[in-house]
Image (cartoon, rainbow, N blue to C red; front, side, top):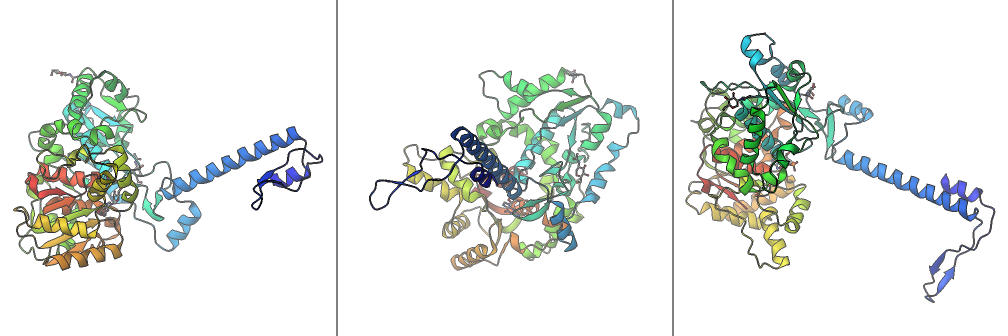
Length: 503
Ligand SMILES: Nc1nc2c(ncn2[C@@H]2O[C@H](COP(=O)(O)OP(=O)(O)OP(=O)(O)O)[C@@H](O)[C@H]2O)c(=O)[nH]1
Ligand SMILES: *[C@@H]1O[C@H](CO)[C@@H](O)[C@H](O)[C@H]1NC(C)=O
Ligand SMILES: *[C@@H]1O[C@H](CO)[C@@H](O)[C@H](O)[C@H]1NC(C)=O
């Protein structure tokens, strides 16, 4: 349209001539002259056209980016088509209902209820994988616990303010999943151990009812009070406790736009994260942490798939939820779980060299055997290879590490392999074949072999984490927070550090 307009509006001949190189002579060659608009007008038109075009391109590109990264809800025509074919994911409404009916949500005006104080961290992480989200969630809930405030929990949120479904890798996923579909325990409203009078966590909808006009505190102010000092997880908690202790308000909100309390700089740096470990690991947040009944049921029903013939081991589903985490999630003898991160890690792993990245905090316990010690004088090329080997190991390298681990004391008696991965099935097939060629294994299974129901399908990363958490030996990816959470749970439950390895 703009082009037509431009041609039609022109009358004038002009001295502006487009020049191009003549291939044969190398000299500038004149293009045939065109009838064009007066110069000033033409410039304006060109500018408008260019601006419009770039705006349009930007809009289309952003939309496509958002679309392919699953940040936009599914447009309704596609929704209808998917619904017709019954290809929409479940919405976990029974978990939402369960949360609504937690006893602490009955607004009985009992005197104790009136005294409960709350903290709602509206700046919680969205649009991230479960590994990152879970890490922040548990630390936030730990801070609330230390402050003696009821933790306000909400959904595992991929997208909000859009339809119930989003697209991820061109497949529909639920935009939000109630946290109780993933975990149980005090973080999501479960009881604290007997004798601990900490107030029970409540859901966001309840907070909305009881806490209109809360006191707002931003992490930015806590952060600035550190001055030049580099804050750690524990020192940040300390400052927050000071501030909260001076706050009489029943309701405290950390607003959405606030800086994050446990930010990526803390999460990625063991020196800044792990000073919280002595108290965090002993707190009910971890000692009574449990996976949801849905996740545990997937573990139970797939037991013969990943670790055949554990005949005497009781099903998790039959163990009361009051049984402490360490006892509930005891080691599975003979099982080796390996986490092989693919997908977006193709790109992510290449960026690590440039960043000079270290293993994430929960993969850098000093007692672990595989530390990231890049010799300081490493040349650029070997540096890239150093990172690739640990972040994106190929099949022969994986097999070599597995065989090495098997020869260690901790690896005695390993006979089944479980491959936790988001890799394509064909690749897993090749990996399985190579593992079999290199060693005698009774059984090799992967994430793709699990048999899952509709609800389990969208929380299956948690099922994998539970398997990894209980394996006799676990080998993970030091740069993955998902591995980090598995390592964290193993360490909390006192698995020997030499049983948690990294590529
Ligand atoms: N089932 C399963 N899914 C995986 C596995 N590894 C990665 N994924 C999926 O890929 C997602 C990665 O999402 P990200 O947003 O990158 O982050 P994350 O879960 O925090 O973990 P990392 O990226 O590893 O730090 C996970 O949440 C899983 O959904 C795996 O071993 N098993
Ligand atoms: C959580 O998700 C459920 C189901 O999608 C929704 O009804 C509810 O409003 C969400 N809660 C919040 C606080 O966004
Ligand atoms: C602050 O700490 C003191 C001493 O530990 C305690 O007695 C007091 O109740 C606390 N105040 C609040 C508001 O938490």
